[in-house]
Image: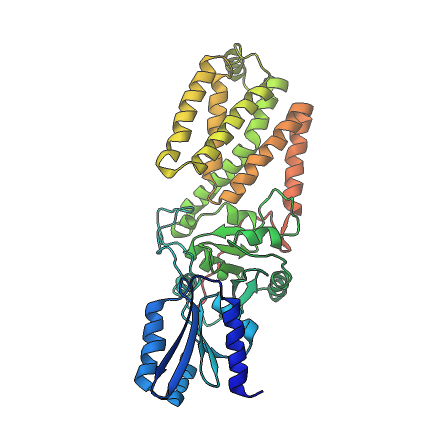
Length: 447
């Protein structure tokens, strides 16, 4: 079979594959002795670029050899005769250019992405305010503009059987743990998933313990946080359709640190970090401590505080566990409502719900006044954590502490504390100990 006959059969097979697609364009062009047939999906391709880089040059060259030379020199073109590759690239936004004896794939993908905006999930007071968007090349630009090092390596792997997505693996090859890098790439290559809609989906496929309530990897929208972790020898994953990045590995300190800390003086940074650890302890153990003081060991506190708590609980007909569960569940409902409601009314839900329900429950004698203070302290403390993933875990862990304290009193509370310490100490993020409370600063390497 000669070359022209092979190209004809390839064109017929590809045209037949996309015969029923409404937005597939198949058209022929001729200028002088140059003839070409184009096939592309117009909803994926940038038609202005198609006109500028494919159509106009053909009418300017007018000869088959000159046009073919131009396409070979085009930076985003690929010469191929692999039909399966051509079909796959068409649905990714490439244009197929059929010539008499050659087939070219030209990348003119048009990615509709939101502009670079200020951070929404991790706002800070000082420092850069820009965040990632849904375009992979833009996110790489944001990182490379901050990390000016020749050692920054970017590898791309395709993940997904039905609709493959490009996953970029970023690392500094001088600082990265080579064994960890090989392990991450192996996990990505063995991943059995139909499609990925977001980088956050990778989390459940990469971790070894599917039912662990502790987060293992930090998901961030901040380029400066990514650059900081690259300088520490960590691995970054980016998805072509996701405005966030994944950091591998991640420790407890990463979840309790904010990028604001790195733009402050050391004393201020230590103070703010200490506040976050204190908030973490309060939101985790305060509900259990309340049950312990009220139901089992009121003599632990000063007599004035004990009498005050007892006085406020006189009209409450339920034990402490029912009282605090009632208020915590209301709090959980308010948090979920504020997250799911439209933004125009979402901010009003926790304010109105907290004020009205809290005051009404207290006046009705369903909960004590001290309980309103306790729940408010728990809510405020949980909001202090800069990474939401750890906040979700704490919202679950505190019920474990409450249950043990309710059933076993002081002994149960101590068992929950020791159990959580052992659980955190045993937790790993890609082989690295999770229970690490501080990171040594490293300077970003320069070229």
